[in-house]
Length: 150
Image (cartoon, rainbow, N blue to C red; front, side):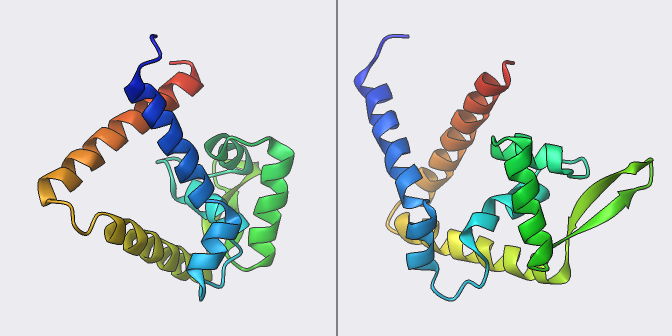
């Protein structure tokens, strides 16, 4: 693929997004959020996808190795955000689910993010917001397929 100005601009924007989503940046803006920002990704990974989440699926969804996912899941369990549940189809395996506190914290994080994103797009016309959502979703989907080798 030719390195166009548009692709270079997307690359710069993605780097800026990654920096703005760093733990330190999130902590600075989140203020009252009680959850450790390192666990935001675990909660997102547990909520993502139709199948019951496991430590392996959390690792895959977060793009990290299994030992790191296991440590993060253990921290989320210790923080009362997740619980391990025996898989009814395979008793040797456990799945993960959000606790009541985990659901509350996830809702708070979603509200916080939506407020930040909504503020950033506040002056955009509604059709631009919809088009951005469509294009960003398509981009993220294509990027995910690329990394999954599809």
